[in-house]
Amino acid sequence: MKLDLTVMAIPAFIGSMAAEYAWQRQHPVEPGTRAGDYEFKDTMASLSMGLGSLVAPYVSKALLGPLAGRGKAAKAAMTIAVGATAVTTAVDVVRKLRSDDFGEAGVADWDTRALQQSTPAPEGQHTKPVLRRITGGVAAVAVASTALVVATEWGATTTGQKLFDLTTLDLGDGVLPATLAVLGWDFIYYWNHRFDHEVRWMWAMHSVHHSSERYNLSTALRQPWGDSLTLYVPYSLLALLGVRPAHIMNARAINLIYQFWIHTEAIRSTGRFERFLNTPSHHRVHHGTNSEYLDRNHGSILILWDKLFGTFEPENAQPVYGLTTNIDTFNPAKIAGNEWVDMFTQVAHAESWTERWSYLLRSPGWAYSHREVVPSVAA
Figure (cartoon, rainbow, N blue to C red):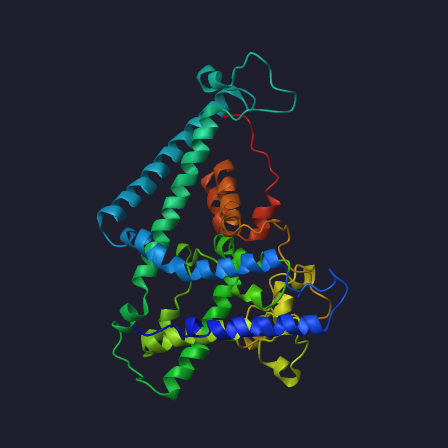
């Protein structure tokens, strides 16, 4: 089995982090004034996420692989998705009819028995009616199971080998197909990375990488564990052009290895290379939560895509790193799952299918702007 180039690069990653740390020790600043400085708990969290990302594909393949195709597991998952959707829709209709009959403040006796208590709830506090509680839970199951089935099937049917088998083109080996693979991957990556920031479902996975309030080479290793749970423009589309799957996988590795070195504050500028390459300066902007930096500079190796498609922003002010609302934890499990929990909590509180799917498919900004909306207590 051919060894992944990113795995082979691990010693270089560790050596580079050691060199960056040594540089910081030789160029000290007032504690807390340089976001690039290493902090033990933050670094350990990033390294844990990186190690987890190496294991996650094997775990997801074992757990989610059976969901693809027409096997028993796939049929069971689809049955759950369809059943939960039907139940949620039916209860939505009942809630609507009851709302029409009793008014927004009225609920029927059988719907509120579980809420009757010997001691009244404090003014302004309400217990969620049983019918709404049921609807929210089943709706979350419906959306989650549907998304899981779709993502798993999409990943299984768009592998490089399957798409390569569909074409009569074969560019073979050599410099041309290898270069085409790298440039093609870079172009597709721009769009997938942009979708990571513009589609909540993708952001739930990608936000892991932005969760650190530090910015150093260890941040590059803070990778998500849920790639297989999302939908991407498949890089394997390159196979339809005759690029062999091996070249596509090498392009992936080159892409990831390149992105490692741009996660640093030690390099302020690369001179003329700033014009066409993604550099530490450009990528610091991408990680910034400054209003002018949000959703900018999505490129991987080339910054030309951002300049071409209107998402480029130069580094004119010191970036403030992290999330617009930081999660304040170094627990890898919480870092990996925080946005997923938040997203499906909103799905469970949604009033309609339009809202439920909007929390997955609209922008994170839209979802966050609706976070404080308190669901009506009427069933």
